[in-house]
Each structure stands twice: as structure tokens, then as C-alpha cells.
Image 1 (cartoon, helix red, strand yellow):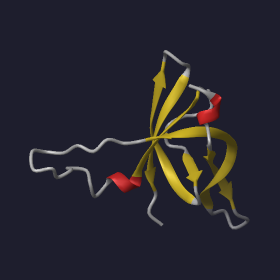
Image 2: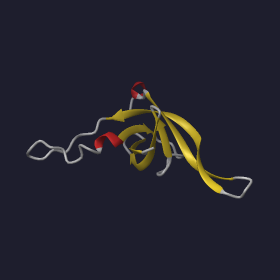
Image 3: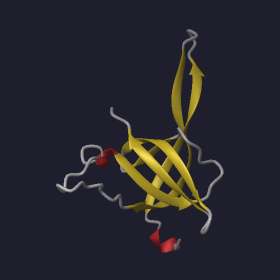
Length: 108
């Protein structure tokens, strides 16, 4: 992976439980770190009629490639272009010491 390809900025957030003075516990997401990434193009799955089986969901799923960071785990929240995403899958790439991240948009 060439460094010049890493043009997108991802902000990773981890869940932190905070307790209010009244005793209520709520989960907030605090920023852990930022890193650069390259967005991968998703290929459509089409049947013989040319219709994609995933066409209604492809806009909610993004795939990025980043350098291997030990802090990246599944179920973190990621901010990209002002939208919140949930980190669904971390796929290590052995040949170039990178990770493929699958993000799913969080509906707000």
C-alpha cells in the first residue's frame, strides 16, 4: 500500500460509560485516534437480469484499507465525512501489513 493513496481521514471512537450525579449510567463514544485510509470500491453482485441483490444496501456499507493498528477492533464507531459508522469487520491483510475495514452506516 502506497502512502500517497491514503487520502481519507477516519476518526475512531470507543465506548465509555459515564455516570451522572443522579446515578444514571450512559454510554458515550470518545475519540481514540485518527488515521488515514483509502476507500475501496465495492463490486455489485448482479444476476442474469442485471439486477443487483445488494443494490438497496450498498450505500450504507463502506470498505476502507488502513495500516495495521492494534487499537482497531470490531464494534468501534468511526466518523467519516460527517457520518457515523459502526465497524463491522476487521480483515487483516498479511502481504502488506494492512487492514480491510467494513463499516456500516448508523441511522440517526
